Image (cartoon, rainbow, N blue to C red; front, side):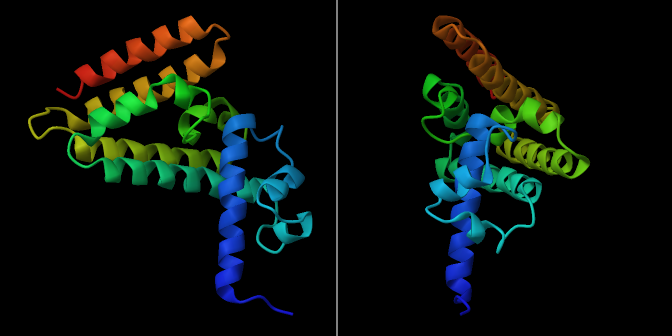
Length: 186
């Protein structure tokens, strides 16, 4: 029996959202197809109706997570970049309590993957930089350079804060990066 297209699309989306969250928290190697489908409330068999491999899912999950982050930026409206920097570079985000940015959470993981995955990561990074650049103050000179600096400060700062096992040091890293990024928005 064939499922309606809307149900197939909803199931695919559940798999993608579960995968995006699990990959961001655990990385490619530590996440199994079973864990993804369990989180999505499905069986392993459902996975293969939508994806040919875990690698294919990984590439698409990066983009899904990035779109979710992009929606947060768009919803922020005026002053959105400032609010984005402040909410991105915080301990709650570091600990995976809210959104899990694939750019920070998967930076080293994506570097070890094949060309298709790295391409997906690169496109996601470029889209993030473009969103930052578009939100730069009208008076900002070198908007692309500033957007790159803010992106690197945000992603690198969050990645480092996640890597250290000292909460106080993590807070210092996040605060330092937040200060630096916010100064680039003036």
